[in-house]
Length: 453
Image (cartoon, rainbow, N blue to C red; front, side, top):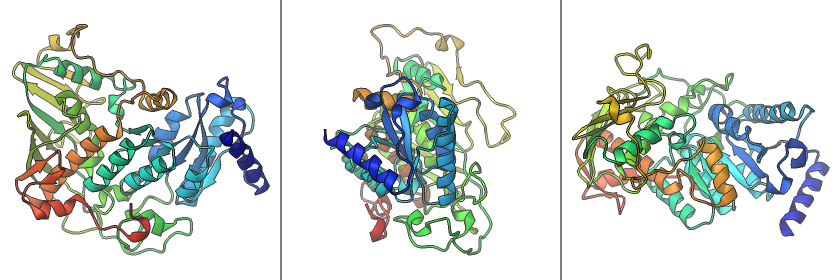
């Protein structure tokens, strides 16, 4: 009853204020309004438009009712995208998508059941925690956090709640890449024999030129965009393109906002590796390696690199840009290699000589039948569909907060090994390095008080 009153009151107040009201869900399809999941999208740039909102908009039992962004140009474009999608579905004009420039205001809207968080990496953990505390179910883009400390806090808050929190590790879904599930299930059932090594291939990033200060665009709340990270001058190369919603943003190559490809692609591939290794809730016990970092220019994330990790079960993981983009499981009796649609190597950056998405040392491995008494990994549909199903049933989803955090924390442990350049001993239970104060200092970063978790 309270929720019904609140919804009616909110619609009346919205209309009185001149904003478009939330259109009754009955106009959008056969699903009853009371069964529809009202979704708010926080961050509506490249990833949200091309992936997160795009996938949710396909489903009749979900309704994106609000969008939020710190850039008003992107905010308006996000609103148009959603309005036009529903207009195309219904065959009539639609203008029901609310807009917010502050995620706190969106989270205060009690008509919203769940949120998509598709922001830069440095905002992930804080926004997820805010959303969980506001009683929303959460789809959180990977990587789970900027630092290990933030990720642990997010996972703990999720665990203590009754909210559905799913990390965007979409390689776990059967659509569009069922080969990852197949590879991990074969490995877990011993089709390569005892697993000894795992090789993870993912690229580095190039350095960039120096970028002089620029005036902050009037459409961007730059202070809020920086969030908990230090105050630095604005330049477009540090944030996102002002005249494109599709081009890759510069923040991906700035260590202030993320660790580079080690967490960008690594969060996907390390999660897949953990799935096949049966180490989803732990991490390595020893890490070492090296990387090249730019010596000048604005972009400062790692370039070419190779790192190694050893797990308590004896399996060794190697992550390197010199390896094909994907995951290779190597056992006593053979190997399995899995990638998305074709592997790109440092020697073939164009991807002209790609490989099949699933390979094995012996093709017979790939046709092996998993018996009824063997390990059967969770089969989930497309990742956003799995999230919506989990919200509806309250059943566990394919990539909960703890598993997403463990994949991200492993990537960050490898990044810390890159930065220190020495062998480190990691306690995955305590989530601290053993006897290394310098490395432990990298588990967190100072936060600006206004935006601190």
